[in-house]
Length: 411
Image 1 (cartoon, rainbow, N blue to C red):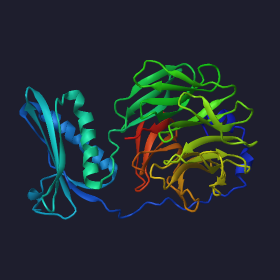
Image 2 (cartoon, rainbow, N blue to C red; image 1 turned 90 degrees about the horizontal axis):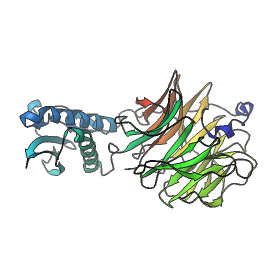
Image 3 (cartoon, rainbow, N blue to C red; image 1 turned 90 degrees about the vertical axis):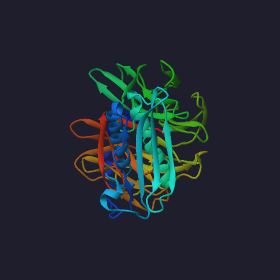
Image 4 (tube, rainbow, N blue to C red; image 1 turned 135 degrees about the vertical axis):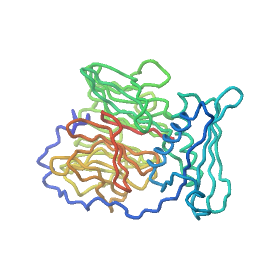
């Protein structure tokens, strides 16, 4: 598996994997999932901004379709002979001139009761603002209708190799507007959002070995985060308690450490002859999932934040890796080897319900959750590496970009 922990995990014996079973339940796709009827008539716009209104509408439509929450009808209800529909909404929008600028106003109305649910007005909507406004209004629709946060205004970070250079790239959640933050001739990998989405921590080999760096988006260069002797890899951040996890081999083999935001060591959490790596925070900041070969093959374990109460989580699958805890706290996603490929799977934190999410000819690795707890972004490996998103409810997939090692920002 092409991960960094890799200079370390490559030491794990492949033979040990055959001692475990690769029998998982088939991927579960929930048929007949309830979706909310949503009517989306054509947005209106003053004559000279009609095309801008249409572009905003199309971006909004793509955002709403992505959620999987709505059954969208593209017309006025009255035109279809519909007067009132229970548990349905209608979304309208218009772009117009106001005080020398162009404004957009979007509204959400209950189609059954005709009650106004809410809306947003955006001023100074230029050509460059259309995508941002559409994403923001899409999230507002999701919030008004479901009470949950949307993901359209979030971002993805990932790595890619272009020619002989490695790049750290940030894009919108849908793959648009990619921006290169770091470009260097040495490998970099494992980026993780941190510090309220203000910064990205990552592993780089720029100094000839694996060290941790952090790049604040408002700054022009990266800072060194951890360069202890040996390898410094597999970083993960939690807003609560505002600390980092990392796998360090400073004392011989790879162990998991708790680090302050500046990279200073707070505590060593594991003490085992095995390789312990890939730590991931629970959303409550009180537990940690991690990868270890202490049982003879790479499996997932959970421990408390202080390093106590260690318990094995996975017993199915001969090689499990890259755990990521759902922001809802109900599932842990990971990669499991199925023959020659890796597939995505989930398991509940008590280990009682393991399920495959993907099962096809491509390898799916490095899963990370969207803030909605429904979508996973991952590295999909076939003839090339791509950053792809998987809907764990419907099984639907889409490719965002060429690259690997993605992570999803918080709202």
